[in-house]
Image 1 (cartoon, rainbow, N blue to C red):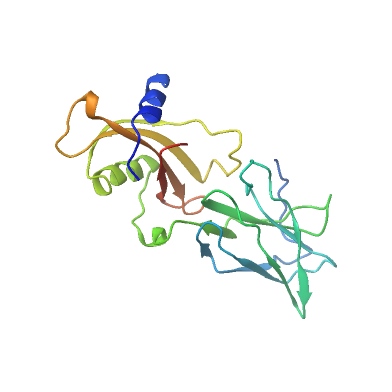
Image 2: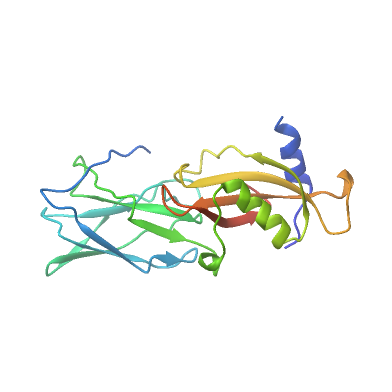
Length: 211
């Protein structure tokens, strides 16, 4: 798809649901595994939980929404022997989503910074990572469009976007294609960088013509 000039250049010109967090349940932290840990948009993934000592278990993905921006909510897990299993919701947006556990409504929510489902483009997990989100954008401009970066600004999140802002950064970018310098030739995209965990490095999530 060819990038559009109008929406991003105009954006450059204009630029001049809560969840409680718990710890271990009882005296032991549950053991959580995702199958798989990385999916494409719309792909299926399941969570398997061992060491859960309560009589019920519900699971959710923090910040996961449908196309209208509504949170996808909680799902009941089924018990099989000593483990619990549930199919995870399928978010409408790519990103990294923390897995949440609870017994039922009103009970403490349990989470870990290591329980993360990645919803990526195909092949994105094999791309390089960077120390900053801005470095991701610069890499994309010089690698994918083979262009020259002209302007880079952080872009405010939409109210429909409930992904964790600590893990997702959106930028509006203007760049010149190869051999076409000057303001009149600039093109643009919205580039989203995602962080590989709360203390991790950044990688490219996607580059789109709309935020």
